[in-house]
Image (cartoon, rainbow, N blue to C red; front, top):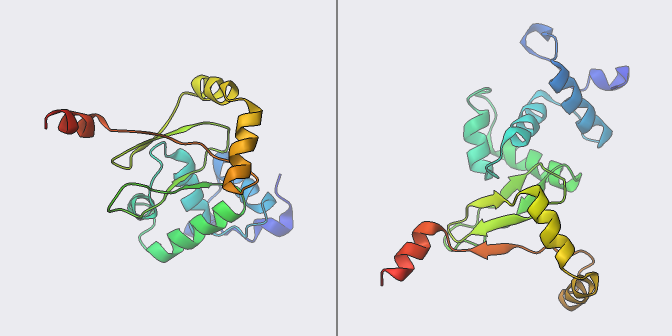
Length: 171
C-alpha cells in the first residue's frame, strides 16, 4: 500500500477520478522503486507492461499519445531511462543494420529474448527459457563473463526472420 505522503506525488488528473486497482499497483511499484509518480510516468509504465512487442520509444510514444496527446517523445525517452535505471524495465539493444533504436521490456522475470535479423524481439516461452538457461553450465557463463569483462552476462539468440531466410535462399 502506498503511504499518504506518496499519494499526492501521482495526481489522478481528470478531476481526481478514482484510480483502478491496477493503477494503484503500478503507482506502488513506481513509488517503492524511488520514482516520483506522475501521470505520464504511470501511463508510460502501464503501457510498457501491457506490451508483449518490446516496443521502441517511438512505438511506445505512438501508443501512449492515443491516451494522452500531450506526452512528448522526450518524456517517453526520459521515463524509459528512469525505468531502466531503477530496474523496472530492460533496454534491448537493436543490432539490426540501419536502425539503432533500442527496444524495451518491462518483464523482469528471467527469460530469453529471440532477436530476429529484422530487429523483431520475441520472448522464448518461459519453460524453454529456463531449460536453455539451465543447460548452460555456470562455469561457462562465468568464463564468458570474465572474458567479456562484465559481472553479469546476457545471452541473445539471433536468428534470421522467415522473410530474410527465404530471401537468402532464393539467391
